[in-house]
Image 1 (cartoon, rainbow, N blue to C red):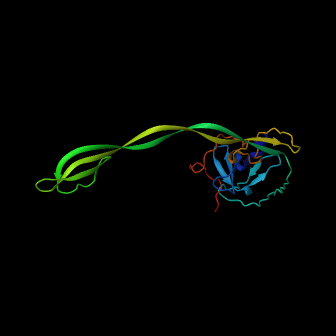
Image 2 (image 1 turned 45 degrees about the vertical axis):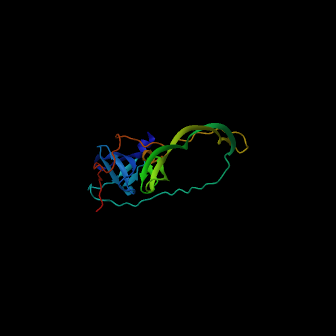
Image 3 (image 1 turned 90 degrees about the vertical axis):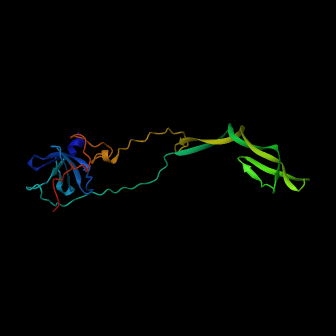
Length: 234
């Protein structure tokens, strides 16, 4: 309730609303959700902190007229120093285990087959290939009325390929790390859970550790044509 009171905005002509945070259209302006459903963006110079809490929006007598006010900001001087909060001891252990490896192995062999031809030829035939078979011609000279080349036979060599599944046991190693946290005296220290960090768009403008209050329902996205600025620059 205190954060909602501090983020509430009132103005002239019955204007009221809630500060949402930095404007998406301009990082130098503040987005305000009005009670009538509109969302406007104004410079911080038009907001004045009220003694009873909340902010007052200065719009002037003319809604479209821009009012320039001096801006006062507070600067935070933050310093840090190092201190020992704990220690971490890491122990490494090697574990050996057996794994079965399966891989295909290819083996080739040659089948030799003799084919009898006994056909006269005029020249020595060339070596030829038919598919996976290499054919080597064998010729000889035979006594005839005239000497001719006789294709005596052919040697057909066929290459055959077989695949066998081979298994072999291989030893591999892997490592595991055990992490132990110790305090400054070397004693074991329990691990504390990390605090939940809110996204920037959900943080409160006055207190970043708390969620942004939502009074008028879900905020509409910028760029859809619904966001309009109450005050425009000349």
